[in-house]
Length: 207
Image 1: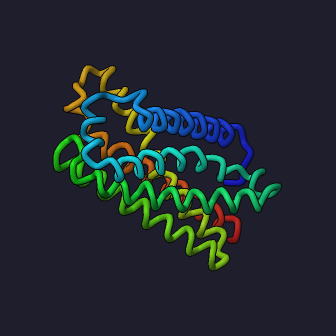
Image 2: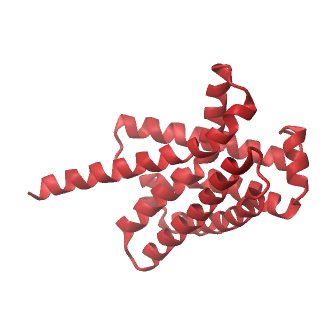
């Protein structure tokens, strides 16, 4: 993630914009300013888990994209490290809260399994990323952080795909169980494809 090509800058710009927008939405939801009454009523049945998930996820979205900025890593390594530590804590908080909420998620069993799987993978990938950097394996750390943020960005893509479904005329109840998977599985596939392509290019240069 050190490239400064135009596509990379555009991609990071979209990543940051989408993340900040949904982070703001999360904070407004927690404050009771936005969100449907149905979701507020559902979350109010587990207020501690709800606050953990909403605020943890929101702060992770607020921090995460900036950790991929090469300039920040090179010029402000101490800040990058502190933000990273905060991000790790927010993933644990948000992930545990998400697991607590998954058992009662809107959308039935399909959505509940999707959210539970997402939250378990969210915590697993951040543990792998943290373990790698503690061991001094920077490249491995970056790879696991990409996988982790692909999951974090699922919060953004969930809203994107729900919007696409609405434009196509699908009802919220029809679309929601599908988007709970589609919000993050393609993200992970895209990251794995990117990492495989990068590894292939590295092997070609070595030969």
